[in-house]
Length: 145
Image 1: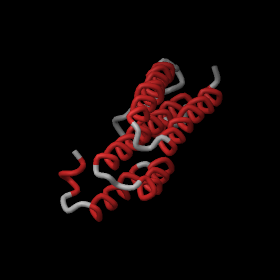
Image 2: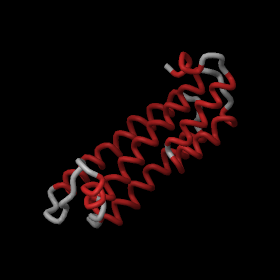
Image 3: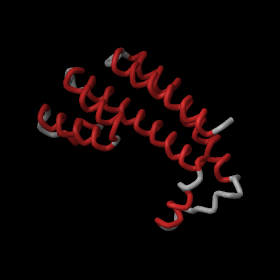
Image 4: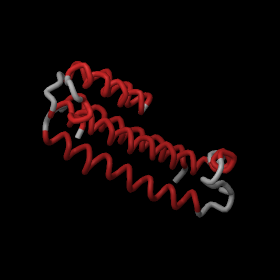
């Protein structure tokens, strides 16, 4: 299968997860669907693509230097693996935000911008959620875990 096809499939799977998180925000079923269905599926896809990428003789990159990583990301399979990695981890962070906001009784409407930024810019969404939690709670670090 071509990397572009797998890219579209991975994006579709992730989009389903983000929609489920937005619609079924504070429900236990959400956590099961997202983690067991979406995140683990993306993890399996990632594992497959990473093996596929590293067995490619044209790969030539490594993780020991910035130059090595740049070389790695000249290979479409390695870029695809990196993208699926982002999708899985951003989804997991989104799931954490949803779960933690439910635990701390924060309105889904206040959390939605955090999820949007997490979806689009990963760590920025987590930072925004931490700021939101800081405004709502006296000791946000204690309320994170």
